[in-house]
Amino acid sequence: MKGYLAIVLVLFLAWYIVSYINPDPIWWSIFSSDRSTHTPMIEQVSLVKVTLIGFILWTLYYLANRLKGI
Image (cartoon, rainbow, N blue to C red):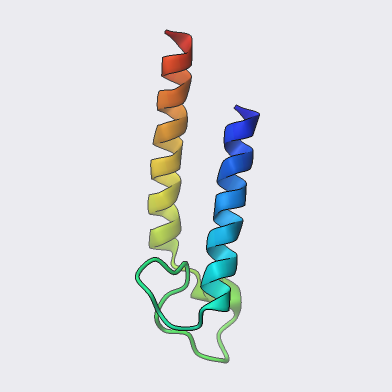
């Protein structure tokens, strides 16, 4: 499953980069819509979005392992 984890990392980095390049608040952006110039970048990350995507990816990983074992 190292390939799966590599794909997840690449997708997450692409999500971060595209969200950083596009300053407009969009529903899929990793950053919250409240982006002030004095707030550090790490505090602008929407933890709800990251947690939700993490849960979805973990579930897919679990299902892939179960299907591999069958």
